[in-house]
Length: 143
Image 1 (cartoon, helix red, strand yellow):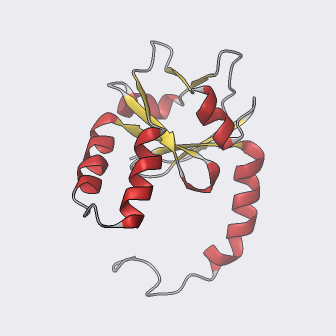
Image 2 (cartoon, helix red, strand yellow):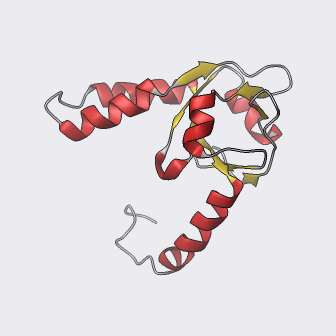
Image 3 (cartoon, rainbow, N blue to C red):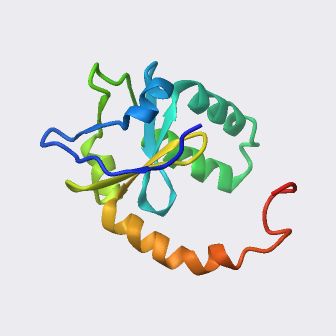
């Protein structure tokens, strides 16, 4: 499980050093793709495969599933982190997420998310009130 917030920097070659806490779970390979709210999702290879299989079960007649799958798979980039724990973020994904030098890399349970630091800060500020107002029944049972 990926937890916490980290603030690595993007180097001149478009690489980011993954936080040390996350490296073991990502060492065998990652898939980086567009996430929602203009962030990037970084999945361990097995988790990406699980999600891909679930999406393949959606009926082709579902317009929503087709649209989501197209963006999700067409923007996907796979690689194995190097010995320093670095992965390269392709230019099209850096542009999509508005990534510059300063990043927010967050643990989001089954995935890692990479955000532009200012976008992440703005998202947190905008979401704080809604987070505080969540009531019983708004989340899955047992939470």
